Length: 321
Image (tube, rainbow, N blue to C red):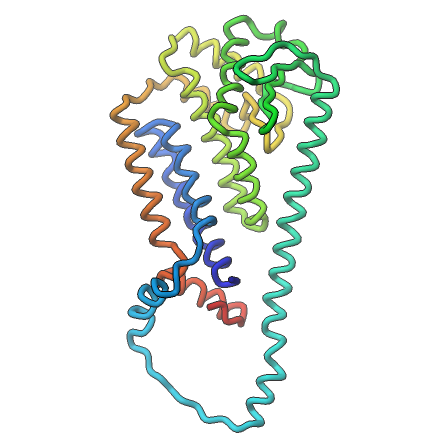
């Protein structure tokens, strides 16, 4: 089990790096929706169970056995007893490292869950109901610094109290469509899945970078959905709404209209022409192929995964196979 977990952590990190490298060219060629779909690859790898034993032997043995020389050592009973006494210190290293990892992951999830719950209570505690649109409760609150979507079982869109004063009618309509789109696309659920992945990788700087890129790609994909088939005037109004919303902080599990980290790049993407259905289909096929290939090459039980586990085990001084 420990060997599989380490393989999964290393493999998913490598796949995050692959997505970080591929997301921009894929977005430029096939559109932001296709680039956003790439993030399914590291998530699916973490959920991929180990290969069955029969497959594992077939995958690992032919390669790992090449050039092996079998050496037999004969030791006396005293040596075996000494090894037996020293053995318990080796697993203790793995237990300490595993315990620290588990405590960090649980603390990360607990902090995000409590902070998100506290934020939602503040929003709802001072909220004034506006309307109900397509099963989503639209509210206004002074806690909301800009348009945002939150809630999974009970879905909400929150606007600031001065929303009607700062945004014109077109901007309000597009902002509402953007936030409702997050609910319809399942982005709020995806955010919690991404936070769970980040909790597993809480010690990993690559995962933190990947999480920020994932959120940026999520917003770009939703932008493309909102603006599909709309005029240049609507695109200009949408860009104005994003700029007006670009202040204040953000909650990791919620979906905000603004993404301050890459505001210029996001505004620039609004001026690009939509991709044809044929181009989108080609991109979807490419992503599907990449996902299948990535999962197949990094699955636990392959020679590559076994080699990675062996190197980590040698570093820690623990047999992880």
